[in-house]
Every structure is written in C-alpha cells, then in structure tokens.
Length: 421
Ligand SMILES: Nc1nc2c(c(=O)[nH]1)N[C@H]1C(S)=C(S)[C@@H](COP(=O)(O)OP(=O)(O)OC[C@H]3O[C@@H](n4cnc5c(N)ncnc54)[C@H](O)[C@@H]3O)O[C@H]1N2
Ligand code: MOO
Ligand SMILES: [Mg+2]
Image (tube, rainbow, N blue to C red; front, side, top):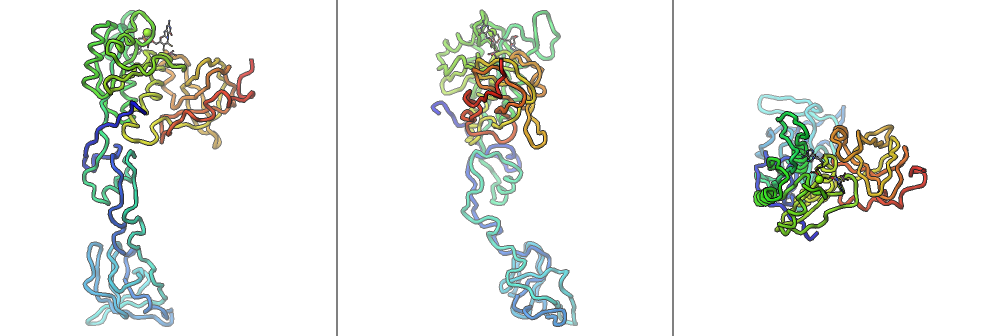
C-alpha cells in the first residue's frame, strides 16, 4: 500500500527478545544435531559383532573408553570392543549402534571391563543422526514472526545472542473533549472520566506498540492544533479520540486541514465508528477515532492494528476471521456494515457468538465481555438466531485480508438467515 511504513529495527539480547517481532529470516547455519549422537546412556558398538547374539549365545565386548556428553572418544570402536557412552555424546568412529545400559550385563576382571549382549542390534539402532532435526540452509523462521519460546530455542541453537527485531512504534494518544476528567478526579456536573485514552493504550500495547499518553485536552481549535502537531513530532503515529464529527466543538477536521494532512477518508459506511477519520501527515499516520468508546475501540482494531502489525512485516496483520452461529436475534436493521461487540464461545464443537451488552457506540460496558466483533453486512434487516455470521477476533493468529470473506457480502445472506419483517 502506498502509505505503508516499516518500523525501524533494533538489536536486543536474546533473553529480552520474546514476544517481539523478528526482523530477519532465520536460516539454519548448521545441521541439528551437528554430529551423530547417542540418544541413550549405553554402549556404542559395532552392530555386526552382535549378529549371532542370543540368550544362549551372549556376545562379550571389551569396554575401551567411557564418554559423557561434551566429550569425544579417544579411540575407535573396533570389532570386539565397545565404548561406554552417555546421552548426547558424539558417536565414536567405528561404532554404528548403541545398546542401552539396561540391556547389557557388565563385568570386570583385574584389568578390563566387559559387557555381555544377549540380542542382536541392528546397524544405526539408537543413533540420533546429524541433521535429523533440521538441516543446514533450511529457512526456519520468517521475518515478521512473533518470537515464541520455541523460536527463542531456535535462536539460541544458532548462536543469536543478539536478535534483530522491529522497534515498537511509539503511538501518541491524545483525547479531546472539554467534558473529560482524569481517572483520579471526582465526577462533576456534565463531565465524564477519560476512558478512551487508557483503553486505546491497552489495545495498541497488545498490538506490540509503545504508548505515549498525552494529557487530555479541551476543545479549542488553536491549542488542539498545537497539541496534535507536538504529538506528531514526538511520536511515530498519532491517535486522537473525539472531536471528529460535525459538532460545533469537533475540531479535528479543521486541524487536518490546517496541518495540510492528506485525509484518506473522513467517514466510513460502518457502525459504530462512521466518523472515523484516517490521515497521513509527512509520512506519519493520524487516526481520528470517535469519542464514543465502543466506536473508538472498533476503530483501533480495524484500522490501527493492521498499520502497526504490517509495519513489522507480520503477514497476518488484521483481526482473525471465522464463522459462528448467532446465539440470539439481532433485530436492528443494518444500513451500514455493523460490527457488533460480542462473545465467541464453543458449544458442542460449534462456534457460537452472542452480542455483548448494550449495542450503542457510546457504550463502554459492552466492552467488558467482548472478545470479538460480529460482522453484519450493510443493507440487511436484522438477523435471526441461528444465522451463520462472520466474526473478527483480535486474539490469536490474525488474518491476511479478512474483507473478502464471503459472509461479509450482502449476497451471502440467505432468506432464512435474515430476519423476516
Ligand atoms: N449531527 C450529527 N451528530 C453526530 C453524528 C452525525 O453524523 N451527525 N455522528 C454521531 C456519531 S455516529 C458519533 S460516533 C459521534 C462521534 O463524535 P466525536 O467523534 O466527534 O466525539 P465527541 O463529540 O468528542 O464525543 C462523542 C461522545 O463520546 C464521549 N467521549 C469523548 N471522548 C471520550 C473519552 N476520552 N472517554 C470517554 N468518552 C468520551 C463524549 O463525551 C460524547 O458523549 O458523534 C455523533 N454525533
Ligand atoms: O460513528 Mo458512530 O456510528 O455512533 O460510532
Ligand atoms: Mg463530536
């Protein structure tokens, strides 16, 4: 996309790299394991020696060395000899099999140790072969992957004491509204506490960004303009909340104009969040999210998430999309596509989704239980319980591009699914 931007990278010590997004491909620089090794505590032998071994015909081998993991044998295993070997130790030259300690009888005379074996052992039995886990040159982890504990193990295996990861972009968050109080303040007539800023901060942190929270501001064009400019200078992208609609004190549209920002869209046919505005100013993204808490939440998941994640080359930067069965009627008509906060659960192996709380864009309580958004295509007349619907979830793996899902289009709506008038 023309406006996409990759975040900078930084090198972090391996121990501090988990949960970050790796900025380089990881290719196996050597075989794993790097040498043939013993998977058991036992004896490295020459299998041919045991060809005729049985209960009645035990084979006796002279033990000529003993090695633990980390050591290499000082001599070969020749026919008639064995080397005591512990799990993880390199198979000595000449040996082609290992027999476990429990399967041999050990004995000594004045000078030597011996083992007795009462079964035949096949060539290659009990050997972990060089490269059986992974081979040199194989692409193991692609850039843009989140570093999990398993990937940490891979990085350590290949000697990455420093790991190149994407820097967390710093997201400036500025709430606007003369009615806003800080969290610690007591309610006053006509005022409410600023919940959006903290909610957005939590959302973008979970997307892998860092947050710079700005003190909320009164609706005043000149000072807000200065605040937004400052915010842009100090951060990698800016999210404002409130002040984007058509009200007397909704100054964000005028601020974009004054900044000469390129407004990509300033209304979108969706509910909630129809006022959402996205602009770019000198290569930095500006998200004008609605002041209404649920609209603000949805705007961040739909529009901010892919920008943060694709800046780290993640190949599934959007919310994950799945199908579920609607657990209750949703009688509201949808002139525009509607994103309903909802709870997704499993019932007898079937995904079931239930709208959560008050379905108004001003609602904050509906966000308590919401773990997904039901997507109801625009131009439909409400939905009946039992309908199959598409669901977007910000948990888990994400998706590459959810918007081509068949359930997102009105044509997918069946007569039975749509609520009859
Ligand atoms: N005549 C019209 N009025 C409105 C329209 C419209 O098209 N024509 N759109 C409505 C829709 S839809 C929405 S959504 C809101 C969007 O309003 P703004 O984004 O301009 O936000 P504000 O006016 O500043 O506030 C709206 C609402 O949200 C509360 N709010 C604001 N900031 C916060 C915050 N940080 N934490 C918690 N709550 C916040 C604010 O008090 C208002 O109640 O406009 C409709 N109006
Ligand atoms: O723009 Mo809204 O649709 O109430 O959030
Ligand atoms: Mg407004």
